Image 1 (cartoon, helix red, strand yellow):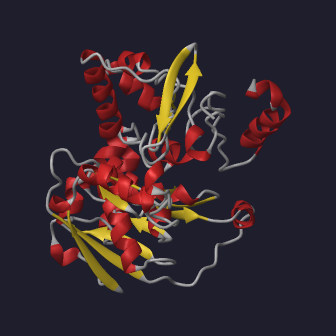
Image 2: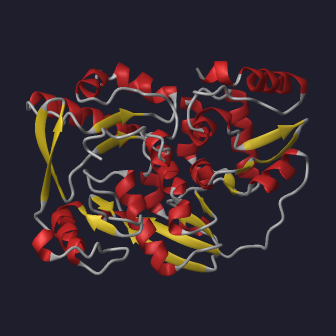
Length: 374
């Protein structure tokens, strides 16, 4: 349907990709651009007729910073700025302060990259990093995969920084190999970065740069958490979710409050869906989506969701029929490894079928909820 409606546009774009140098068009439906850039497009170091220089990117989306996790400096800009770059104009900016964020320790076994980034988000919101660059360093970084680093960099807009940079190290090189980059180019990348002093050993403190300011997080202290009810920086430990939500119901209207009178806290509404009666209360789930470029790019989180679905099916658990469920990965790679690992049937059984590759529910494109629910 999308191809039928936009036939002329796509024909023009295809012609453009063939007519101009250094222009590559990624077909619609391939995935979220940040993840495609991470898995496929990013070069880390450019080779222009024998001249080498670091890769960089600007994008018209705030989550462009995801590529910082691979050691490529990039951030989101406005549409006019992006068009100017496409036409050969430079990006101008005031040299920002660089905040060093030292990571130490080893994460606990049940902690995911999402837990880490929500902890970082709350911390850096308190520090104040708006308009600044954040660079991660320290032995804790060596414990993180590229997928974990990309998750942390992706949420850079949520903690207010312009960029959240992880320098290239041995883990970055292994990722380039795993994602099928050309081995000769990978060798050149390594040699160039080592020669220029940009290749990092996070366990070697003598390589740590001087920063405008340094803050620190011990990964061992991070616990499973979520955020809300309204802002990503309002971190709540999973163990405190129930207590926190109940407190928010009666709290003054604001970021952490709904100002609902105590006598209405246990109020419920009955409705009929598919000839069956259900009821909704405060906190009822009506939409459940596995999506977003932050999470679906991370194999450990996605496989964790698949294994949770498997355990749920084995335990005889089901999803309420009125809940709108969907699975929209950031790229086809996710579908491939979910299928190969054998967890896809369990996700589908709970209603989490692949509905496409893109932002979907994360940007409000979930489609309407059942009329009786609304």
